[in-house]
Amino acid sequence: MSFESIKFEEENQAESEILKKNPESGHEKLVRSLCQRFKKAIAASIMPAVAAATFVFSTPDKIGFNKEDVSRMLNNQVEVSSYIKAADIASKEGEMEKEERQTTAKAAYEGMVIEDRIGKNDLDWMISLAPPRPESSKSPDIVLGSSDEFKKIGLNFETLRSSVNELPEKWRKNINSISCKMKPEDPSLKNKYGIENSEVIAKARHNRESGLTDITFFESFNKWSEDDIKEAVRHEAAHANDWKSRDRHVNQRINMLYEIIGRAKNSNRFRSLYVESIKNPDKQQELVLKSNEYWAEIASAYFSGKDLPPADKDLVEKFE
Amino acid sequence: MESIFVFDKNVNFAEELEREKNFKGKTLEHPGDRRFYVIKEITEKTDKEIIKTTYQVPQSPGDDNFIWAVARELEKQKFKIFIFDGKKREIARMLIKAPLTAEERLGFFNDLVLVADSEVQELRKGIEEDLRLI
Image (tube, rainbow over all chains, first blue to last red; front, side, top):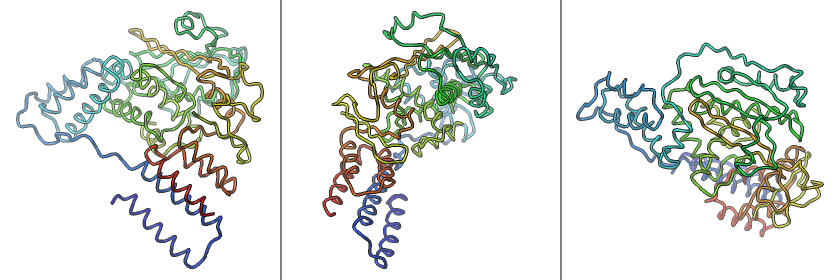
């Protein structure tokens, strides 16, 4: 019997004792019964899945690579799919401490699961280069356009500035600038993707080498409300601090994407209006698009104080 | 088929907007104008950069994504909304008819979001049983 089931039974017994002393009305009886039914259904929904993986934690029978070899294998300037292959070999045949072997084997396993689900190209596209970037000297300050420019596109500068200042300091380090423009310079994308009637409202450029993101907002037909500004800043900041961020160790970045992919398709996931609206005839591509946005949406919801399923709240706090 | 269940600012249940009826109801006026849009992001990759462009794509009644545009507009207007289909939609309808206070009803709707699909059938049977006993 699981911990959740035992706790549930104990709570039921305690409630029965109280009821013996205080008989209840029909309405109270209905509410109590419904509460119990929902509690049981939710407890069953959030029980942890049985771990599918077992890792080799002890020293392998034969060491094929010494510590220097392992260090070289794991610190190359390569795309993440190559790192995962190296991590798999290193954890099985390399000379390393028990804890390092455990984390490396786990990253290799999770990376292979992701590759199986979304393919090598999208794995490399999403996580990008494996090694951490050199120590950044960038301060958490973000270069903001002038308040007059933002006024011209109908975006309240003070709301923008306070939204930026509410972000965690280490998140701000990954954003280089936030500026604005009246109209986008290149409308060709709209034709290419068959969304001619649509309107560009924002653009984010992520530099793979520096790991920094530049964000531009545009004038919107629907006017920028206070909520729109906050939501857009939080959403874009979350993208700038997802599994692409080379501030995190590559093992952590793989783990982050692995967990988000698991949540994005879970039946008790956070129902983001944006993520739910993403549809693609290619289901593998749909999973890529949904996972990419799921993190940005749960992080944005977390900072907005919205109710999140406990598993998503834990994820944001783990990777914040 | 999905429905949007709408609660007003005082947590009272306002109405159910059904996809079958193109989400027409009393809480939203003039569906079909440019307020109704969904967000679409398009990502392009170069050797040096990942460039993500965000669009507002207008939606009209009958469009597949009109439901999300309606839901977005309702949230903007500070309504609390829930979107359910299948068995969860049936449970939501049972909860609306059940003799509950506004807060209790909203609480159960919040709980319903957290229930996994595998548990829905049993939950539905249980609630049906409870309501028969009243």
